[in-house]
Image (cartoon, rainbow, N blue to C red; front, side, top):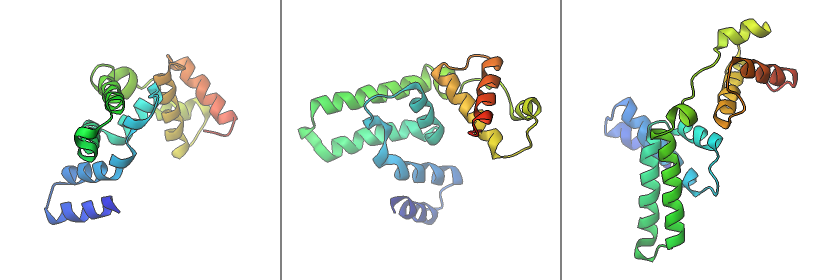
Length: 160
């Protein structure tokens, strides 16, 4: 509901498409922030930045401000430190380990997948590419051969 209301408000303010998208994204995701997860794995860090894009930085600080706004000087020090730690992990992934955790280099493209497995253009290709990227982030795939092996396995299991 908040995202719908935000979209109406930013339209009334005549913000640019980019500004509108950023505000709506922040409103839509601010209550379910990954900053509250107990353990941020490399794949979760990748998924956070894939979902949020550049607005992810804003969401981190919005989440922290929300917490302080809700609790003021009565905040729990342990929770606050946990929040800071999660923020640091996500920001480190974005700024310091971007190629490894946020935007790994593409090892194989859709045309190469279609040619290697005799596939036709379809959403399956995008799904396979995404599974390969997540496996890169987790360290399961490090080269083209690994990528092809993973794609072959997913196709054989009907997951691709």
